[in-house]
Image (cartoon, rainbow, N blue to C red; front, side, top):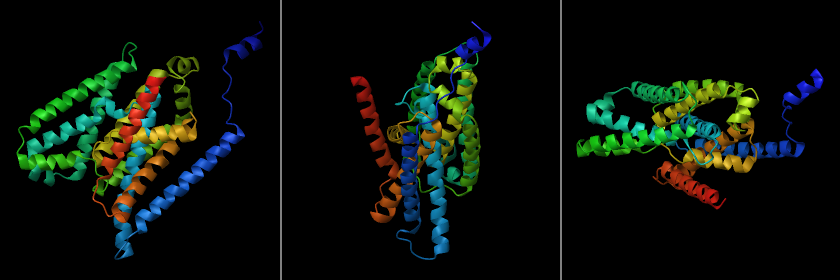
Length: 338
């Protein structure tokens, strides 16, 4: 066999560009999602607005920015985690981030009390929580992927074990807390999208912007990674390094969203599943923006309806977790039938 023929045999063919009907369908989908998202944003800013527009727009604008940042962090981290684990029913919460957040809040209330916790600057609390979660998760990832090859299933199993450990320690400490302080702690453990300190928005936006740059650089490698470990290695992807980098990005995004609003378990699963169903694509250049738009639409639109249309005090996270739990059960049952 000649050298040219042998090289043509060994080099994998370049991925085909999306067909014209698929590109047209994607453009229509993004146009619809974009229009709905813009409508939700405008409604959030102007519906039932009273008083000075300067105050209303500034006040609601900060809340809107918080909702957008959390939507981006949760949607992107879930899609990336599902790509790494090659499983559509898993979310980063399986690694124990939510349980670690509960343990951190419990220890803070136990050590400082409600008065000391209120006096703690929000930026210090936020930075400490994010740093602790990222350091622990990075140490776990390096231990699992630093030496011999280890399975991602071991990572998930270790995350479940740590989650149980964190919840058990939290339950033990909560039994020692004063009942009045325990009531304050319970309020802090529920995700709320409307009481984010403005000082935290700038640093959160900077972190998320940095992750956008990294992910855009790796967008084609993400598509190859979705084909599986063996295929990704055969196509020249440094699987171990890419997976480790993505897991660190996931831990950073989850830490930021959890420190901002609290633990959210099923919201990422909800928007990631909808993004896969609506796009029908495995390309992350399509999946990630679709998931982000769906997340922003769900959070901003849901908060607008609850707060300004229905005038209800229901916490949006309760409804989102309920719907996300239903989606999780449907995915599990569909997988069992298969």
